Length: 181
Image 1: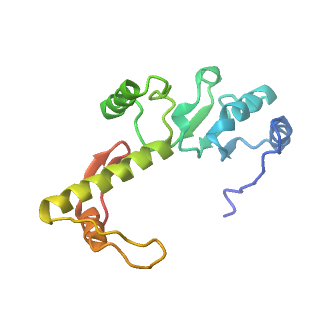
Image 2: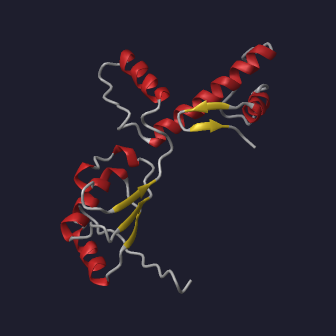
């Protein structure tokens, strides 16, 4: 579209992202979509700030689903519009309860609502949905396990029932309402 030109730039290999931000600064582009791992996001934003790409004229969209894991304090006062997407609200009581539950079982677990990653929340929700489906199955059928040979293509006799229960089950997980439609 003529009204919205898009320029794509790849972050440089290594840990110095300043050169790509200098090139962006020379183009006078003000709207930036930043697609990088949450593991490097803080450093990338810090380098953008050091080059002068933070201020009220700049707009960032962050694509990392682990937006909440970043310390935003250094970037709060420049007036930059930074928008991100997250799969869950890290301050909801369900997350806090789960983290407390995990911490009681493993004192070495150093997870907090600010460090919980989207992947962990999604896996938790998938397991929760599966467990609910198995619970429905065991309440409606007598389930007896028969050994299956991993080398065969035989499927478990209750496999389709679990899939069907998963399709009709609705739960509210860490990431919100989960249902198949």
